[in-house]
Image (cartoon, rainbow, N blue to C red; front, side, top):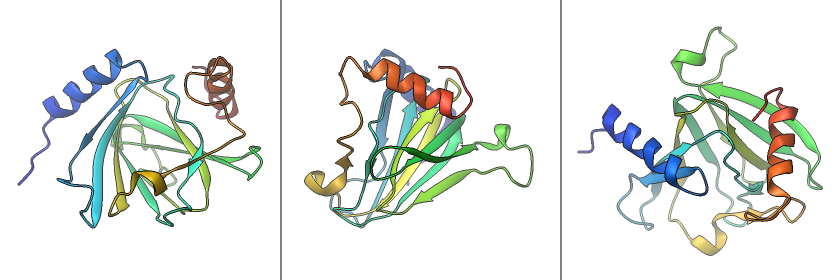
Length: 164
């Protein structure tokens, strides 16, 4: 049995802060062959997750805010902003319209940004995990490490009405 204490998520957030990508995941599943892939992902403000979709393996992705607050941004097939959804843990849900998470269809181009420090997602996706099919990165978005990333990340936050 796995038990996930506050200290586990705090440690994960501490690792994310010292990671150059400003995020850190912790697999809950024991192997990539399991039929249900589960992980925690601590994502700090300013972390860049290149827009992507999961069409190659045609699997939905479930994201639940365990701690903090996030924005899921959806894009058109050419990279135009389509919409965004704010979701967060109980601390950030203040009305019946508040969302704790999202389930993303495999054909949806998307990214996630953290809106407050200390944010942690629970990600769930059907397995097995096949690395070559897991994620189709958007060619219209800057690649991680590109000089255009900082400006692009700022545009993501601006689109959602937040400064990074």
